[in-house]
Image (spheres, rainbow, N blue to C red):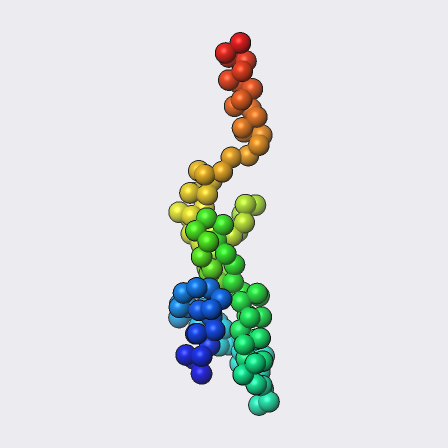
Length: 108
């Protein structure tokens, strides 16, 4: 059963799940299933778990458990490295307009 759940998770996150991710999903499936749960419903439970517990990192694009990520106004990040890299790659329009203004004023 665990292998089936791991395979379903892999289809959603494009890699094999970590132990924490697999354990989280198994617990979610156990809580949401009963003796009449079918294989099709199992797939739906895994998808529901994914929607409720996983987020995509704004920088690297990989999916991780929300509990293992950090959230800031720019979105979800898997670690501080991705958060800093994202900040280095993006600029606010305010900062760009301000730098353009300073350049035009100084060159005039």
